Image (tube, rainbow, N blue to C red; front, side, top):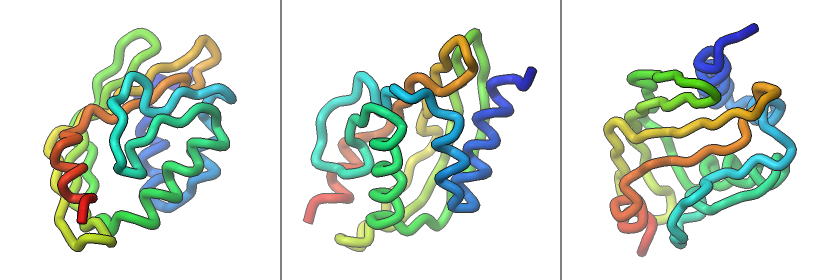
Length: 134
């Protein structure tokens, strides 16, 4: 059986290729995306329920962000849990503002079938809101 951290690394590799269907394939049907997140106007930080709705996250990210750098720094694994620390740099297309995150935590929770049941960004939402707002 594949370690959960390897599944997460495969998700990031698919993200880098723009292969959203490969990502959606490893999500639970009722995945809770951005669970326990604070409500913001930032379109890529919206809570989404279900695999089909998560496709909207990737559409939003592609429509609104131009990535210059996306690096997975560390991956930590526990029972049914993977935490990845990611650094990124992107320009918000609508404002031209640069968004930088260092060690942004991505929290991946898995169900008993090894599918992603919950995901959230533990990000600097204040900086992301400021970068998004005109």
